[in-house]
Image (tube, rainbow, N blue to C red):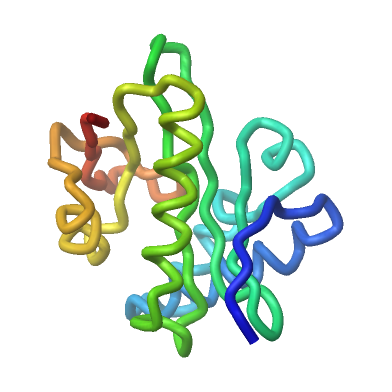
Length: 153
């Protein structure tokens, strides 16, 4: 069966939350850390309304990405980018990335930002992102994570 990239449906919020948690934990985080991140990684209908969630589907959902816009004109935010751990290195991330980038261009965005899991920095650098600063973690007080930017075009 071929891979399909499509907009996520509101009734898939719980599935996307589970995917996000599994993907994040596969980076080596323990259960205590993951419990701290649960609220930040929970996909809700409200969050789905604030950004465009896209899913990769082949025998079920195997990846997701979320594109949002922020207050800066021409600037977008990658709010989520997760692949099922056992489905990594199968081109799913590349397909989702191509969709997100095409959408960003359709929206006239000239740059994308994201707060990266430190383990994912090499992946984002391969996509062309550069680290520009550090952002406070949305889950863990006192923890800072890389803030990255991609200039489109």
